[in-house]
Length: 72
Image 1 (tube, helix red, strand yellow):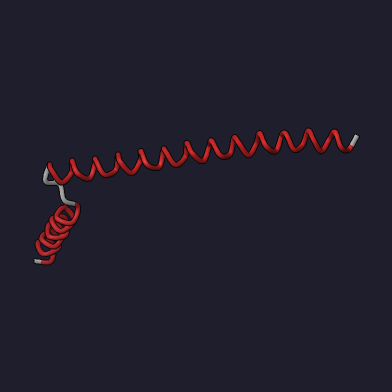
Image 2 (image 1 turned 90 degrees about the vertical axis):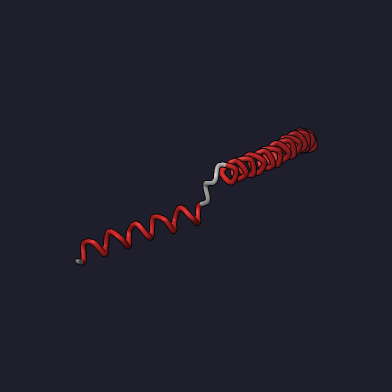
């Protein structure tokens, strides 16, 4: 009886391991797809002249101007 249970458990284990392997493969594919999408977005932002550092610098300068006006 225990031999039969062990065989059933071994078959289930093999099935689960196979499913895990397939899910890992799918996950790796999705990660690659996500990286490609992020690179495309980054390239499009650069083509459109949107630079995060320049945008932050502009906001900082505007903030300084507002503070300077308030302090007068």
